[in-house]
Amino acid sequence: MARSDDDTWDLATSVGATATMVAAGRGRATHDGLIDDPFAEPLVRAVGVDFFTRWANGEIAAADVDVPGAPWGMQRMTDLLAARTRYIDAFFADVVAAGIRQVVILASGLDARGYRLPWAPGTTVFEIDQPEVIEFKSATIEGLGAKPTAQIRVVGVDLRHDWPAALQEAGIDTGRAAAWAAEGLLGFLPPEAQDRLLDKITELSADGSRVVAEIFVNTGNSGDALDEATARWRANGLEIALDSLGFPGERNDAATYLGDRGWQTTNTPLNQLLADNGLPPHTGGEEAPFGRNYYCTAVLREAD
Image 1 (cartoon, rainbow, N blue to C red):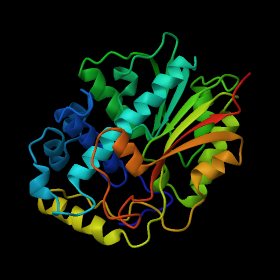
Image 2 (cartoon, one colour):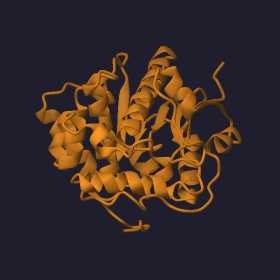
Image 3 (tube, rainbow, N blue to C red):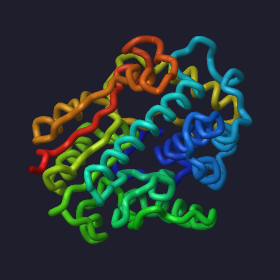
């Protein structure tokens, strides 16, 4: 079903299921020794989507699901999520070293960085997502006995609504630098909503603030490869339709958009990210699914 401007979801439906899929990839990458996220698989299991649980815990072999030689599938996504997780974890390590003590995770889903990363004393992590998603993750991770490594403030609000007001009510200090993470988010926003989000981040950011984002780029005729991969997932028990969750239309290049608003950006192409982490390159060229995506960090007018 196509997205609409007022659609809703939880972690087992619509675009919310992509958060569970991402956590399943992190769980599988942990199972394979690529990263260490001990919360990913238990959180996925709690959501209750059987296919994602079996993906996370290693029960499904990628070789039994993936299309041989295809540029996309379970193994490629697991590799990507391992590399992406390391990249963003390293970003936050730099944030801590720079003395930033406010972190905002946009569309936080099943992200557990507030529990597994070594934050500096005095750090506050703001997690923003749909109220149902926030409530589920908070209750589940508390049930696991997890202890936060920073002060966590949850902000249950739809990013299509007045999330800046909700974030300010939760206590963010816009006079101090903050670090923002938009992991796997921008491609699920309409083009104009992507621009609004980046505008609001800029408005709320003091000099020296930082951003990390995965940048989605239109890739022409990549739908067939995605359809083939997800068809194999459905044949193995996935009952959630993962197609048509994005929004069509040309969008502004996010790094350029940030640069025009005072941010100094550094971009990392997908294959460079994979190579930096000792993982096989993405195949199929720029027209393959996600082939032109890249990863961006940015700093707003470094403070003197």
